[in-house]
Image 1: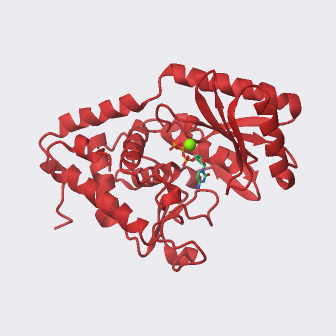
Image 2: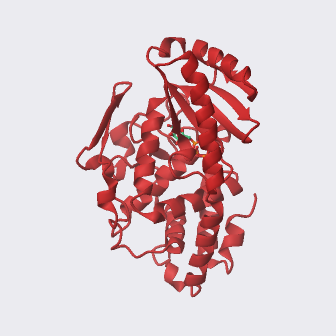
Length: 335
Ligand code: CTP
Ligand code: MG
């Protein structure tokens, strides 16, 4: 029964497609928001360089990886040599500097899993998290951005999936569901596996970009302008891809035995990674390999309760895409 499911039974596919594209467009941040983010970064640079002339500030996360929807906060990484041992001191000093410059709600969270300083800029209304030396995040931000520039359908699909996840309450890592970063990796992986493929596997190609961060060698093909048109043999529209994405996570993914790997552009076995059983808090109930920190399962936050919620939400979305006469309304209905 499942294998016979096909999107083609929907007669309103063109209308549905137009509807998804409208939703996508409505989520794109306007230019003035980008300008305000830039303005805040410039202010932060001025303050930081005065104290630490050798330091560098990098944007990462959704404000820099092309998957940022409107009204996003910005994520900033302060990179400086030798700061690792005294990270919390750097953060406290940073909080001090920022506080005295009229930035609001400045808070140093030195005990968080990723220690940060939080702040709000009253001038632009933008909130910002600053971390120290989280350079891997800067590199994976570049990887995501490079993938996004190969085929527009990645950005469209990821916006729709993120919007769905936020509306349905399954984008909360502290409640055992998945981060936006994990959802974007799921979208990339899914598009690598379409036949014909919509996306290549940049880490399996000739390395034109290479950095070593925390002893991890990060290499991939980043001359992505040479890959425009890569996915053009695949004619699937965004509506078909959204349908297939949810169908995959509802009915076809082998949760018990496989790990999705953007690094290899394929699924790999849990066995190979020794992710077959619970170790500490890592239960590996849904396995999403980080592209660079390959011992990191982005699904490790998922527990035996939240896996049920997640899978029920995938099934709900797949059913809506299959049968609902007005899927866009139902799909994003607040939970
Ligand atoms: N990140 C990471 N490892 C994680 C989670 C996040 O390296 N386990 C990094 C990634 O570089 C990611 C960034 O932190 O792009 C921000 O993560 P997240 O908040 O999940 O994604 P955003 O793209 O910022 O999404 P949102 O729009 O929901 O803020
Ligand atoms: Mg973010």
